[in-house]
Image (tube, rainbow, N blue to C red; front, side):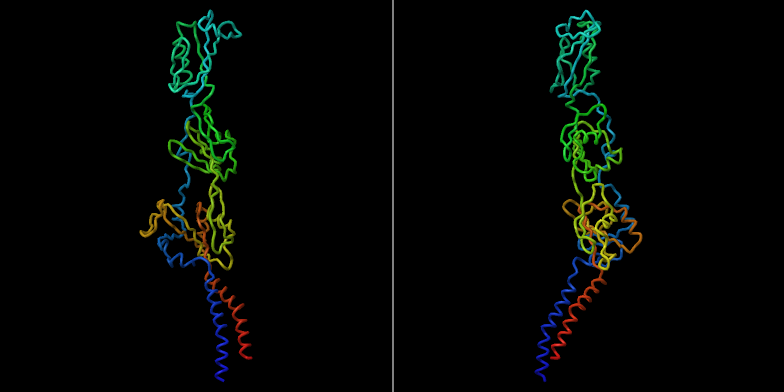
Amino acid sequence: MNRLSNRRIGARLPRLALLVALLGTAACTSMGPSTQRVAHAGDGRSTSIRGMQVIRLDEQTLARQQTPTYSDFSTQLGQSPAIGEIVGRGDVLLVTIWEAPPAVLFSSSMIETSVDTSRATALPEFIVGSTGNISIPFAGLVRVAGRTPTEIERDITARLRGKAHLPQVAVRIIRNMSANVSVVGEVGNSMRVPLTPKGETILDAIAAAGGAKQPSEKITIQISRDGQVYTMPMASVISDPRQNVVLRAGDIVTALFQPYSFTALGAAGRNQEVNFEATGITLAQALGRIGGLLDGRADPKGVFLFRWEDPALVPDRAADVSVAPDGRIPVVYRVDMKDPATYFAMQHFPVRNKDVIYVSNNPVAEAQRVIGLFASTVLPLVAIDNAVSRN
């Protein structure tokens, strides 16, 4: 009898070991940290854990987040005046001189007008060199760089008095080579766009370069001026005429194709990297794009947004929070989906490029899943074991 019992116990040991292994596997299949592990069982508004700052999403947090993430062109660049007709080095000028009859000073190259009361002489085109001067017959070297055509006309007229009969002078800039902007990046044709007294704006320059090659909501405009760089989404410049500022000579306009993205992980509707527009999206929109939370599996109190944050937006951070080489700190924003006020805050909380949204598993759902696995796997094995034992 003892031998039979020992034999039965020996036969059950491998099956019992299998049962223990199955239960252990079921208990460890939860991927990602739990809600309590991330929140560190902190019921306060913020707490520091393992070098990270955990902050609950509320109205106070939202107020700090409403600082713009891009430059405001109308504020940073200002409304520049339209470029005047100022002659610069490299420009090409056309100088025409009129004389009243009897005109003899420029008779060798006279062009007679239809009315025989004056004679017009069109001099060859002048390219303004590095000295900023041009040479006019019988007038000598005339300073033109940094002066308007009207000022140059008066100077030449004054020098010709007493040499030509009632001289009158007209000066035109026929090719503007000094006052221009460069347009590069995701445009039809990278080029230099000359500026005129009309006052070319950002969108004028991009249109002259063939327009943007990508949809406007996916394009970021970068303006380089005086060693500083300013950026704004192209869609914002189009929708707000104040941002379509007048350009200055030497500006560099770059159209950048930058598809921003965030990553969704855990018990979310979809685990994937999601692109979004340069104008930005809110947390509510981001959760909608990933299909929300998984019913029966997600913990509504365990929605977290991981971000490397600007320290200026975390004034009450703990002393032991880690600091990245670029000065940013790791911050986790905790979202309680059971709090109705959270849904209003999420509509204004901005998601930024490279954010990670993580949804933890509901511990009750985990327990139910383990019980279900036990019922579907372990109980049949017990029934088989009992049948074998009876034999």
